[in-house]
Length: 459
Image (tube, rainbow, N blue to C red; front, top):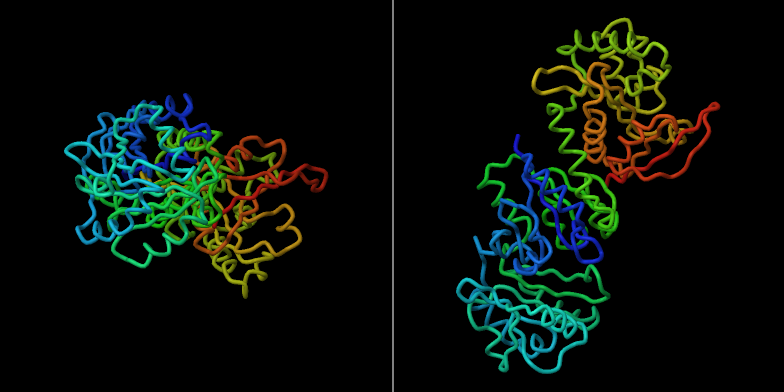
């Protein structure tokens, strides 16, 4: 199964210092050389993006201008581009005086895309932009003397930069039309707002769908932090928000990882990708009779290997006391319902899952997911989920993958935050929780032992 990994740049892959760390560059290049299919999707032009990400050895097309342009990161050449219709250009020309003061029109002329802005007085925010890129000798920034010259070539993108209060009326005007795409958001680094208008279907999602289909990818995993990442979060199989992301995006995410300044995307990719290379792909499935023999073999293996561990069947409630796999499967079915779970000794309804390896259909772990933790013990230290990895399959990264897949199940159930706990003397379990976005809350004492409480934001 081929997976395409895509990260936003500003506020996500890039640090707040407006650069990629040496760690991120080295780690992503290493992973690409080992087979990781990675690219980025940004609101920046390809020229601006390459100033930041030019050292990344990306072989796939990159998504720029929020999906308006697909380009080659190594050469800066355009692969696909979208332009405004003549009707849209006429509409924009009516805003020429506004554009002249607050922004620029990006136009294709031959093989280049020029940012054309009007000479004269500008908002302080936009003037700061001009000064920055003039100081960097940006050859694609053109100051023109006449409003008509703003539209020389094939216009493909409009950018206005000012305060939110100044731009809001213009946003209210352009949003009246449904034949183009609009992003209105706060800048990732400064207290200013950007109003961006692009041709219809110029979104990160549309461009990534094209890449996914054309290049034969089965799955899409994305990372982001802001408003213009919402469209790709909506279509992704998995979507991860950095901790510094806006709340709306966190609510859409599969999980929340660390911050951009912690190189969270690169570290996440390293953990997940390397472990996936070490292990075969797995899936979670509810217990059924076709797995009865393997369930019983799993049980015996745990009993033999973990005889001195009283928590050896974490997440496998009643498997140790059941007289047969068939009996345990019946108990699991009863535990799913609030009406019947108490008859099995369970305080709240839960769903049990077998973690099964695709290549040989072997059970590598078992986990549960409680539908809620409205209970004194579960809400204090029991939490939403536990798991046990088959002794002969440990050390291969399955624990992290089992929890990751269970987070997806939790989201489907409507659970917004998962409580997951571990003993203070269990660093492996703690690492699993942290790798899946766990945020430490506090340490509590339970029957003489110390337990760490972590919360994982699900939706």
